[in-house]
Length: 251
Image (tube, rainbow, N blue to C red; front, side, top):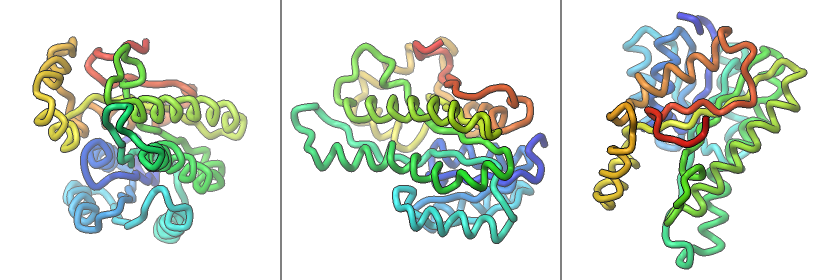
């Protein structure tokens, strides 16, 4: 229970990787605010956390909206008094053949995948500085692949977030705030949908994992985030932790 009494906020926690990370943080003793746009999903995850013995609250907020982020943080601090861990998992990517994508598509992807985490980090900064807390951003290996066909925005947005992670780590390090990124490869509703639409590519992805299985968001990705949020990682910042079964190229 290395995170006992720590307060964590996870965006995009209603499903997929965000849900798995929230459950892992709760199992490690953290008090968890699950944040997202769909109340029913958030309530379900908060219920899972409480059933496992964790303290949890569900907070409806759009992670791209600065005022809603501010309100969510106010709810967290009024409930538990502060914030120790911010996990930016919320993202709604726009994919497709490059020539078919529009400026509006680019704006939507960038707002969701980069501007959203940036706003969350900026709004949470004073709380994290007070607690000597940390940020964990969720990346993707797409930008590390030689072929990013249909993922031009997804790849570039996630790599921009990785660059932001390193910059924030350098600027916030002297103030005691650590900032890292996790690149997961795990079974999620979105990945399953993509696999159903692209069965050949899905099979190639699975066959390329050295450990020979697709990770679980809670049990394979979650422990890595727990480690980054714990005191054991007190000297680790500005890095990218690959939780992908060995598939990615960044080492």
